[in-house]
Length: 402
Image 1: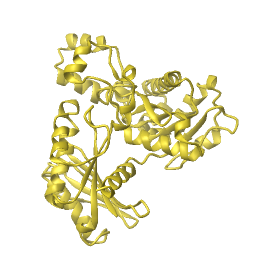
Image 2: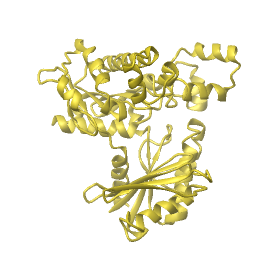
Image 3: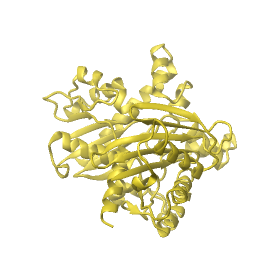
Image 4: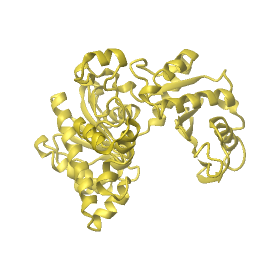
């Protein structure tokens, strides 16, 4: 069975084609700047090679036609025709309280996703465009499955997901903590249990998905009991361009002083804050780390805040679970930035964590393994995430059950 996994943004489309016989990735790529008549392009990889082409894609349907072309034609061809694809799996950012599991796409499901657009205005409309474009290109008969970013977090108890504002707003607007990066936290927590050779139902794990967008999750007995992102991916701790949690009065005060509208406030908090806002250098960890190495004090401050907030949040989740057996680092920063991992772990010594400095320094660029010593009371791992594989597996399971 071959499954195409799709992640649609408002002007982008990422794809991976899986052969589920061995879960191998046959091809992957991305369409970017969709709708831009001058700068849209498709990048693709298959058969051990990569390339990209400048091509006009005015909408997602045209983007899928380009995906069809590179999958079935030329030197990057991996299938003879689209009939070889058994199903399509979509990443959906916001399923709200309406969807607590992956679902087969129906008209009712699409309308449900559409009804949640207010909670994810930048993401859900784009996901719907992707589903509808797939129907145009692949036909309505091909099964499509949606996998929600927040499903893994649906097991949180009310004390973790209810915000302490008047309860009527939860009832009227479903304002609550939803969490995101759920497929990543689900994958690495399961992988952690597998690597440890233990049943996940017997473990307490803190998973740290650290990248330009970051979140930390407490996983107790295989279920999420708390996570750092909230109603939107803005909540939590400092990220590339997002502020994370701040005193709400800071926001209202600045709105009064600067005269910001709600949309202007959103731009500042989501696009101009975080590591970028503090460092004044960049949102990319590599650029900020380089600036710090050259003596840039604001870059150093941004990274110090990041390290501090990560370990503070881990500590709070250890308290929430009344203990911890393992800590996992994943995501672009979590998998590659060894000095951050060292700072976090060395400042959690009260937990009995002992870091293997040599293992920590070499655990980068896709490597998987343990970075704690044999006598560490808490085991620490670097585990590359694979959200697309989770989506492919869910899609296969749902299609097989039809």
